[in-house]
Image (tube, rainbow, N blue to C red; front, side):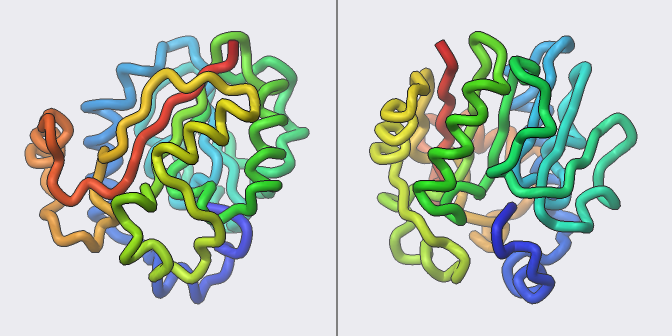
Length: 216
């Protein structure tokens, strides 16, 4: 998370600690995302929040970025926590990152901020680096999209794909319906059910999209 999501009031109402979140991410990483990450990779998570994703992937170098001052308290040993905005990646060496992950982040940024992040990642990423985005698909989640008062920008699977390609990223995978909208969607958070859900050809209540883009 980023921008105004350092507000503790927001964390109480929309992003409170939840043991189910760790169960969800541990299962997602083990059953899906880890296959995209090689042991020698440098993985960067933008808007890491409680660090549930970055803590559960295995690779040589792991870096988490978030404005929230509480981030360092949540990262595991071996994960570098950087407290700061995702729009300022100057602390990263050039051409040092293989895999970038952002979950439920870019809908909280303006398009100008998002474009700035993409431009910086083009210099921080190695040739062939990927940007992996998980976030609400407005086409499927228009009813609840603005229930989160910090959402400022609308993206569908079509507009997000076009935005990335307009800013020099080649989209290599786009899944319009990947996961339910949130932990509040009503589905049980059981590892076996999550693994089954990921294998379904049609996923009920899938209102979050997953988009992968690559540097040429």
